[in-house]
Image 1 (cartoon, rainbow, N blue to C red):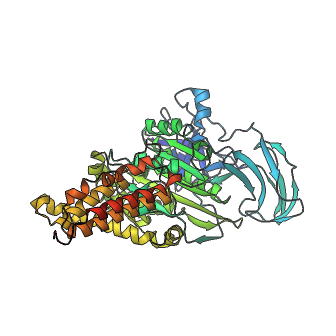
Image 2 (cartoon, helix red, strand yellow):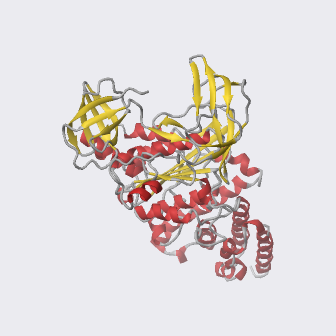
Length: 590
């Protein structure tokens, strides 16, 4: 058994508690504080004084109250049953708590994160007498219709498998296998604890080469992210950060989604809870909840638990990555997490840095985003974690510390624009301020669909950049003062914005756009630009091209043509080309 230490509270400063008498306690050990045995974590040691941050409401806590510790680090229970569950920041099951407490979480309540009485059908894959090592797959459990749970030998365990149960139904408390190691016998169960602040090991890291397909055209085509990559979504209030992350969580092609609501409004997490069981994944026809784990630490919950919630989420993601899955982590929002760091550091008396944030803000951000990546797991399979963090800069000021430090550690930056959001252009991702560093890595994947993908993408991007330059001129002299060719560039850029960049998340056809359909739409718009520009340079008026019904109809293709019928776009583009050719001025007319 773990050693039990006891001590006394001497100072209470909000969620920060100082205690004495805990001789032998270590950094990041769990401590249970006060008569309600509130969960806390040791975050600093000052001689004989242990400084603890309490993860629950500690109203009424006073000096002299008892503190107890089993000298174990803050950990999460990893095993079957995580999928389709919702936890708070320290992995307490909120559904189970609501059944016991109702609408409000009672002080000191402790429930197992996983159902200890539920039986899982376990199928062993190895025989006794086999030499096993960390990461060896011992058996499988069907956790949900979309997720096959793989039981792995834990990190650090090597030896001979001396026993394993036969196929059948077992709970997470049952002994499943035994391994004879050099240090003695190790007995394993279906679930085990892992410290949240300690990254799970892997054999080696790899370069990500496959894109995370999100179904959002502006992301997949213009600012793509690779599986195992990192991205930030910064934006001011009302620009659609949460809705963009919801869209990514709903439709991206990751095997597992870990959604972390960190300090956000409760109604936003309610939307996720109510939507995901109803939404059907187009790839397999199953509810999205069957591949989702949710961490809800809303703005009315204790601040310290907000700080640990992202570690809880990414540790769960690493667990499924080790099984060989592709996992996407949505952290909404890292700004609220950073604000929790700021509040706690001020109570600790740390010297403040920029805008009051602690000097170790950049280090903590780096530690979080570095847990993303494509790796060769201990089992020999490839697994990856993609991290997408929302950032909420006050007033939309991207020069504030959290946004600036985040941009140093991510390779994909989807900047949300307040003017686009006000104009009801969603996703409101700015094609001027956003960037990605994954184009060269994923280029070969896209070229398997179309060799011209990068050329087409860059040509259309140049049209948008030219449009941005021309808009500055138009503000000074008006559009009528521009040459016809530049007027046509403005017209085509507007077509690209409406027909391609703007996407309706409530439209049954437009909410998700397949890569094949994206390519067809983009090539059609580029053909309109190139063929039309030739006509304008030959003397045709821009309004004559704009008056064509077939040109105006391009905007409707995204909603009218289903993903599986993307070849119909070719027929439409051919028809458009024929009508453009018919407009060509005769040489005598020039």
